[in-house]
Length: 553
Image (cartoon, rainbow, N blue to C red; front, side, top):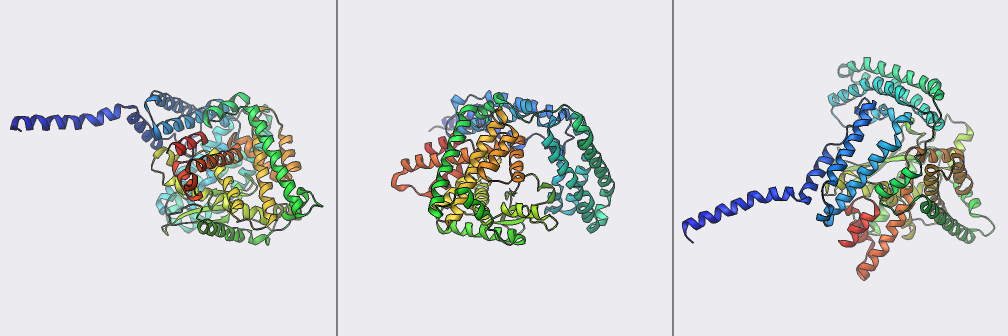
């Protein structure tokens, strides 16, 4: 090779290397990567850090429409494999946001949306350095009068149940200003003294907001929480990527509800043929731990569910992790009858991924009726069945897999249609693998599944006009067996979050169908551990995308 040829060859190689990245970035796959990088790092400003004025909500909508236009300018026909699935997932996320921001308009209906101060307890209890805590708290306190002022100007309709729940939340939120923040300032007087003035301003604005909720909001035109059949069906099609319309989803919900009732009836005959399943369920619901040990007992069953998952090799858990069961903060106790779950998002001070399961505690100041009602909804059955749903191998484990997903879009986004379906699937999995050791617990597990069947019915029913609020309450009390107060909290959550609650049973059904398909594909090589690991490594997306990734892998 001559010297001149060597020089020519090196220049040609250098030119190819320099032009390859540019060509790659101009490809559909390259454009998608750029879009996703921007999408996961430049989210719309969090409501808790904004003034929450009309301009803020308009900006959210404009940004969503702009992102959709950018995404759709990337030709999906030029994508394949995981890139194509990511494109579809991103479009479903943005389509859901667009529907909420343009058609559902919760900022004109729901006062709870504006009470972002309620998560200041999280800042107080966080592991942040003291100076950072004080700075965040100060910034948030200064926003409270502005946010609540905008709420009073922008809420256009009076929805009685929204008003009742918002008033409860606001009045119980006073504890933050009267106890929690003053205690924080007392412990750190030098650093925190500057919080005193914004603390008082925040409390004064909350008092004004409470008066508004009591007196002025009921004077506004009475409105409806329902989003309407057209918007609901658009959500099914474009956000959840489901083939159901309102009518077929309604039928699916009722068909599966009736099928679960038949299972309950058959099981009841094997336990005591003289009694109905409802009679047996009520008997079993009267069996509960000592009231003040419910949180302690819940921790025991969380730990037992972990041991069961590992002993049966149901799914690998390759991280140092744990779940702590704690009492739920007071102002959130009326948002659901049982509690809520908080995922581990990073390593804690002990180098562990620690999730928190927060339960409404038993309170001595209640009257006898409320105490008895509480205990009926915190029996052994609900404690033992809820533990795997929330923790092992439910939300806690699914959350860890999502946290470690190498694809940025899937790491940072999830959908209830899979995540809640996965939680309910784990209740079924624990029954299949012998965790529920008595027929009493099995019957309660089926009753709790019936509850999720009902969620499909009243979610589509309430928002498409097929069912009234009182009919939904009746379904939960008369046919599922909930007490009225617990039924109300259930239905209230659906009115404020349309579509979320269909995720439990619909998602579980889709996961069970995927399991059968994957089992047929793998034949004798099929194992539950492999199926679960592969599925969770894919992400938490609409089931049609999960199936596409699983079966084409």
